[in-house]
Image 1 (cartoon, one colour):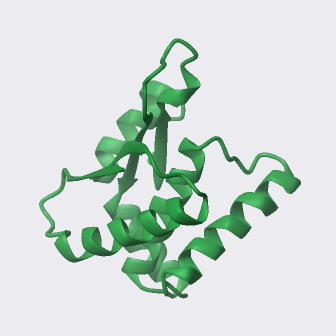
Image 2 (cartoon, rainbow, N blue to C red):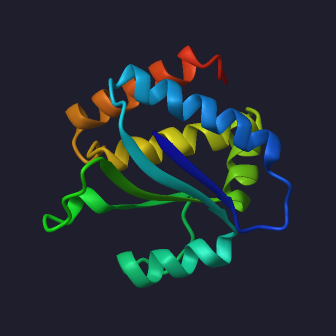
Length: 147
């Protein structure tokens, strides 16, 4: 299992990255996935805005956006190469304040949310939302990440 953690901001994220790594590994353990690779890339609002605009046609920033390689039916690796999770650090700070919890909790939540999207989970329908959000809560609670 390989999780690439990349900081494309000018903010020191070393402590966040240590926890994100542990939380995502706990999530993969819970989901019973042992061989996979993916990246978490932390960027600013301007960068994620451009990704959202260019790839989703939505002209605004977002908190997390994923690019799942397994969505490409021609892609057939030996091990699972899931794709990339982009997280806006600006949104992490804004939303942590808005929701009244720590920045660490917010960035871990977004990383787990992104991982679940890479694995094919979504929240477009109520039933799917309940499944995905239940898994998010289970992974975060198992990692001692609370509100």
